[in-house]
Image (cartoon, rainbow, N blue to C red; front, top):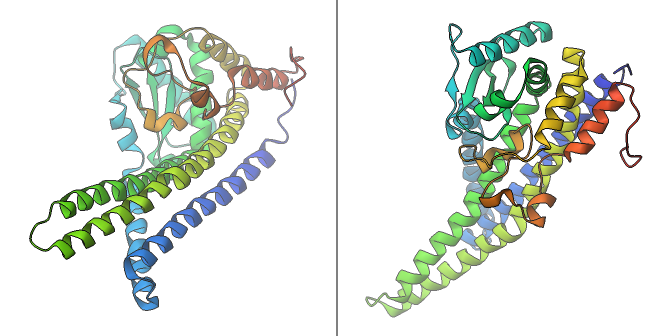
Length: 332
């Protein structure tokens, strides 16, 4: 079996990439803040500084709130139901036991365990630190995986927790949401001001001024949505793809059995039910890219914006960990 002697270096490089990506996220948000402050203050320096301070305070409180939530809002978003230690359900008991064994092997606190009532097979982990972590699996995953495959999947998710990937992922999802909120919020406020300003009869001059401000707000919001939001999505995808490949290998080291995850990923290559409970907003956290919508069909744009590397690429990488020859020479 190929030795994973470069895993520590990969984890270090992943943390460095994550730090730089979050820094770019924050830079992007602050550029938007400067534009907003300039627009609302007319370029007055003192007013701009005061506005920027307030915007930074709002951003700081928002990040602290997401940290305090510890990812549980994502579990609630996906309608996760906690599995208690004394469960008598055989499937749930097996999952709970696997998580217990792997947390001991990894030297981590025992995370909370949840099941999501969705027929689409998938899994995800949340939590800003190992002490606040949770691992969730869908009912669809439990229905098609044997114990070895479940162990491989859960080891993958536990590796995300151990490597602090979840903290970065949760923060990146939060920052994308913050940018989206600013963009669409300004468009909506601008629409309202334009509409009511255009119908104001008390003072035509005041109404016209309100309408003009509304149009300007819509323009700023539109630029944020068209330019800032796609950039933030691309940053999030870059983080997710690198993180998933590393968690595959890190999980294989945790179980000393890459074949479990290989077999699980091979099953997930087969046609699967579309997700009905899983939330698209947390797609970056899932084990594999879930299918949404009718007929399990995805557009070329959706495939290009995947949060995960292709399954055949991940399988080939894990087979190299086993020392097997890849069927394709394209994977490097």
